[in-house]
Image (cartoon, rainbow, N blue to C red; front, side, top):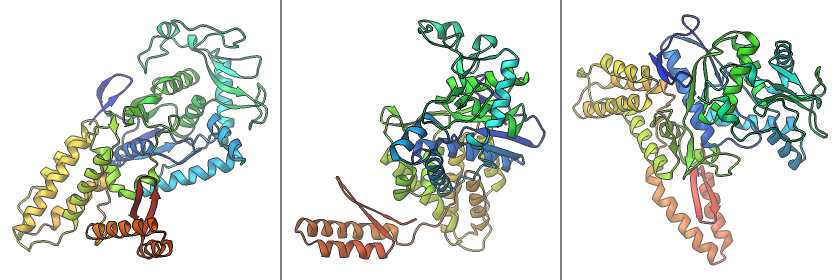
Length: 456
């Protein structure tokens, strides 16, 4: 089994620190609004990796942090006139609901930044004592990047090159422009916690270092996240952790998924070009969304489009149909299922090559359909299809009865409803909406027209 590590930029044989056990840390969510499909891409990717490792017989301990104190959370809470905790709790609950709907298994622990501050203070204190960090007059604490000779090794950046054109501004309290904050001095009106350097709150990078060390130990087998976290976030995690413990490597295998694009730009909260998971699930099944993600190699970028999701929906339905059709008969089906499984394993052992693994499943589904038409006993093949699909987190739930057949009639009713509204016959239009609602069909009126979906 080989895994591509961002640190070495090569595929390496996977050898965890402890035989039969894997420690896995994945950067989690900052809960200040609903999660989007870009989040789904990352967490589906690492859910599949976790599932496959367990399929291979490893005991996996999986940790995912929750950044429940952050500038964005503070700003959003102020604008909504609620507490930071209330806002973070609300959107973390929304996030966990989204993950469950996508059949993403929960982490073994979701440590929250606000509850791990004593561990962070302890780590910062150690770094100051070792001369890797310093407290500024304001009460903020910074990491001294010059104290780490190989700073930049994950991103492949040279500190001197990063310094080109950079300079310390007048009044800047940092010793060096690239020094990064580990403890932020308190600002008026913001939540803060006591520390040896004064009231404040932890920096984002420190949060993940402290949690990984606290929950998984001084060396972690797999650390995952999106490629946008390589620098500075993961680079700074390495610096803090290895300087604090003296143990190298902090992480044995760095895994980074590609980014989801909407058009030419990365899908992100800051850009505002979002498709939320909740909105996507109104139209597409969880299997369709998972299939959309894993049909692409995890390190490659992925572009969101209606056409791609619709193709994935059809693909999910093909697999589901093959898994649930009645057997053609009792005659033995001469299909080498061990060879099928070995083909699946060979793909996944090669840095989690899910597109090739899926090709194996679709080929198996095709053979199941052929076997049924030939009057053969396809049940063992169906069991194999379901087993291997579950490794990828696909449920292969049976398609909703009548959904495909009902579509044209529902669309016709929406056209009639549209005309009734244009003619100001609102009560009749509302009757159509209410009747469809009683059948489990939700209507949403949008500027471009009404859309519908089954309640899931």
